[in-house]
Amino acid sequence: PPPSLPPRCPRPSEAIFGVLRELGGPGGRSVPLPQALEVLGARGFTPGQVSAALAEYEGLNVLQVNPSRTRVTFV
Image 1 (cartoon, helix red, strand yellow):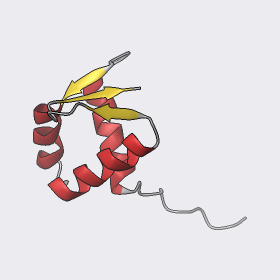
Image 2: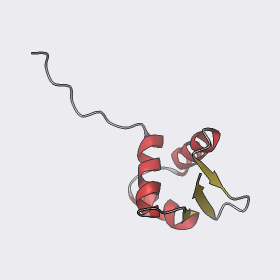
Image 3: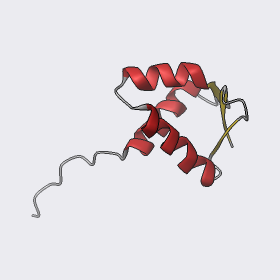
């Protein structure tokens, strides 16, 4: 049989999206951005990685960040 592949490490943006979903809770529609940044920072993500992830998922119409950047809403 082929050798088993090591567990796939998610890209930072995928991991960040997973954390945001987790923070939103079951059926959660939105997450306060300051709280999300605090949790993501504690998990070792840089502000640049978080900004890139938010921009990527906004572009995919999966989430939206409000103009004052205080809240992330899942679409």
